[in-house]
Length: 434
Image (cartoon, rainbow, N blue to C red):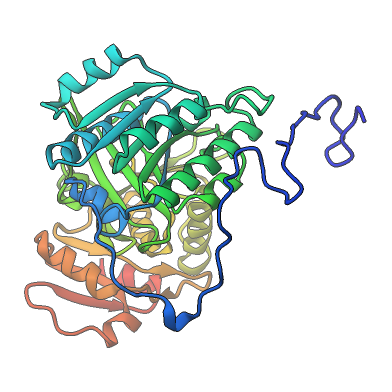
């Protein structure tokens, strides 16, 4: 067929050869051996397997406490974001602990890797480097060297000769991932593979790639900014949506121990349209500065713009303010920004956005030492958010004196020393307070 019956585009079919198997349906990369027998639940041992600590606290946090032996971890991110640098730092710290580490690169030469390694620090001879893209040779090398941790950079460059498709194609990526999955489980090797991402931000290749691996980590951030965020979106051995914050320096990636203090660095004093709010990333509360700029529009069509949060959410909140409070902001340009470049879509920052917009519109600054969080409904009510106590404790730790939060959360909140808690039921209550 020349035309696809689904999307009606012409000449869009791509040939995907299927590896030939035997009569039992085993693929060319399959492994023959004794057939396994089913096991009862009572016969399965529940001994806790020791994790491998990487030595990077933020990475161990996202992984759920370290690397699990025999696991397959996928690390995705934009080009130049720092994936190879982070994994090379992991190799350095593990090799200094006496772990046998094998770094396999299909994109860089040995000289290029050494140039980056010299910038990071001293390395141990327990780290072995290999520049290879053929799966057959890589498999033989792993069986001979018997490493404990293997880095594959990247999965899109690996290929198997018996699959007649170009490296990076759907067939090659799926076959390569299947091979590494079998090696990880069969030889109890921890394998970390690097995956390039598409324009949409997802790992290039078939979606089944993320289903096959045990853990999926995304490295986010602007290449022109100093910070990077490592986010766990899938983890069979720990919680998801945990994040780790790093700062890119000359000597490599450095951990940011206190992301809230890092994000609030440089906050202006006495400026209107600036409010601090709190978002939960996994189990970690992070304080961010929400900035708003509202000014009369000189054109007939007011402009709306949001950076770091959902544009549609900002438009909805401004409609609530105009309907419920009678603020005439429909003829004003409005710009909302999450300072520091963070991308936050949690509804708990709604109250911070509302207060920042009102502060800029009225040109009245919010008092210093105030933080606010809560979800705003279409009726103007302030709805509860989860883990309110953790947010309040984080605010108190950073020296905030007043916290505006939903009245529902305040009813179940134990008394906190050193910070004043103000419960609100609607945006009208917020206006009356500020």
